[in-house]
Length: 328
Length: 269
Image 1: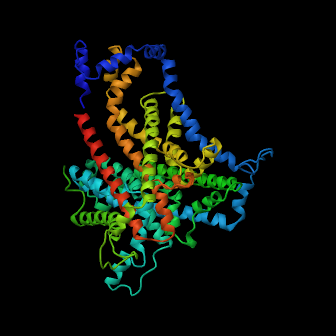
Image 2: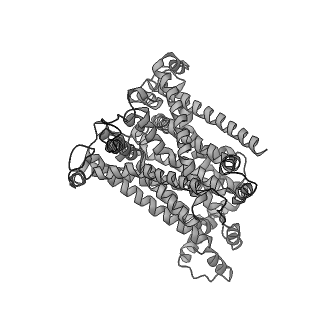
Image 3: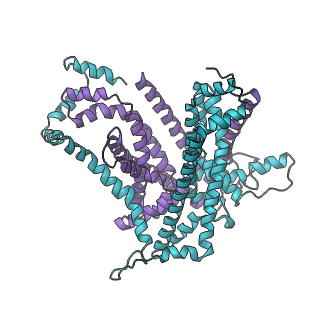
């Protein structure tokens, strides 16, 4: 695209033979447009207001609105409100969470699972990102990264189903193990925390891989060379250079993956079993029944979001401290 | 570039193995799923004795599946249109402009992308009820549109930051008002980013399950249909439907990736 050229031509006496010119000329001279243009250029302040009004309105009503309304519903005793009855402010919906084991157990399970799966994703994708960023030539890097992107274009449900086929009793893994003579009867992988982990890591790996890759790619080669000249071995170089300098990528990847893994609903339903019920299923349960269970569901969603935010916030603080400590 | 000091040969081979193992991990499940769709038996799993195309012909003559497919595509296109317009507008506001509350505005902008799936779906469900939007097509389009805005804004902002300021100034010097300068300089420059973001939104919407599930009425979108079928057991028809969805999304994804890469390269030179 050569916008430079066309602008320069315009500057040489407005003779640019561009096909759309009459159209834009007509627009610019059109009465209503000129009126609008006059309003627009009257003052920088007014111009900013015209530009900013819609986005700000959208952000407040569409991005913030649903979260605030969820918070509000979580604090009232019945929703939807029956006409004529006053709605009362209450904390009962939150209290319900602490009252019953079937509520808080999935909650802590979800957080534990999310943390463990995030860690697994990190361990799995760091070498992949490292290899791509440091050991592959520029040209091949793009191709090999694109190769990894392909499966991630495919939707959550389709990929979950693919994992179901892979791990089933007559699936490829069991077949391979049998063929190798390691097992006699199929291992029941499905409907366990193992199958759920494989599925969730599969779904989130890219969100870890990309931040790690871009962090590792920025790493200056000279540092490694200097360290090697000073006699540092591969492990020392990794621990003292690569790891501290990519800690930002690690922490943003981990936060992203953690937040995403706490929010999965379909994957735990399809890949998990009765002993792996996650909090998303608990929350969803309140919305399958009509009406007055919604405030409890909303309260539980608020609890989960708050917990996820607190955990990721603390995590980020710790990572920042680590980084500062290391570069000193 | 001197890569001599990087790592010794053994470590390098180890890393290459990890990479290819990872490639296997992400591809094998999908390949297995595709293969099972051609198996001549109701039963999913090995061994495969004979092959058939019956599942595909069955799926393509099933009016409900075809309708669901079209329904999902229409939802994806309409929600993408909204996301792209709003997202671009927000990007123009945020990029390269300093104003009071910019950081908060930025935070609000990325919020929908950071909220975990189930919570996002629940919040939209409650809000739709408040606004009086019935569960169904409109609600899904709205939820997808809001959820996808941050992705458009981030992509467009990245592109916008590379636009030479001098071009806008030149246009203004020649008498264009800010809107005209935007329409004739900024917008054409943003086209690759907007197209890339559109494809991304189309795929996000087409693949989305959790919002479609909680905001949908009686008609399912494609992922919701597959989910419902899966709950009553695996069957080769699901493989056929999923394979068609897979091929379509992967092909569009690859095309968009190549297109944006080429467009970016061209505008850099």
